[in-house]
Image 1 (spheres, rainbow, N blue to C red):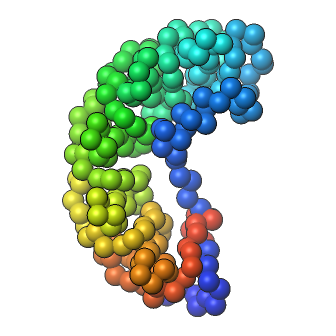
Image 2 (cartoon, rainbow, N blue to C red):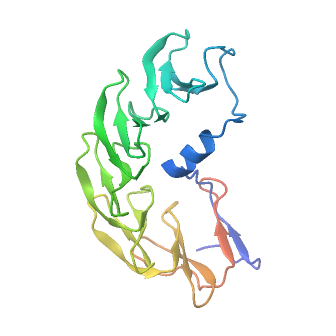
Image 3 (cartoon, helix red, strand yellow):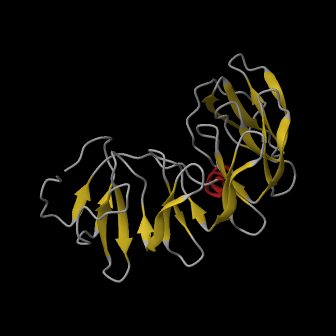
Length: 233
């Protein structure tokens, strides 16, 4: 049973939310990026990122992106109009247009540029947006695991992902795409320790549910934030 709280905000558990590709792209296209670098400054590059899985992405003054290893050697030539960091051996890239695809660590395009927006891979899955602005989930071959059908889809946590349909209602799906908690909430957050926060717009308040969708608390909190993994108050 949750400890009784008199405050209007429940403090729950930390969850690092990965921004969408669009957010990352806009942030990193800034010429004045002050992101810390773990390698010595190299005059060849206008920008050099931290290392991810042994490679660091670099950008020339002409705006072309490639990758170097820890010795500073170019391992994937500068050729992309944008490139993301490597996660699970895959990185998001753009090749002159706005569409997004994926490369492997050899620089080979393994999933062609075709998505309007895309996330990094996590547990063999990545969220992508198609040309009709619908989100789905693909595997590392580019095949859909969950068809593009949602307005919003978040990462899977504890086997479930919160999704928003085109009526702006939130529910939860499992990794097969099955809707296990129907679209009914006006806001939803990821599960942590078997509990998730959902919002009722009419009441203007948040509550907690379990993995069956059962309410664990009334809608009485102005917000429910996640700050430390596994700590519930």
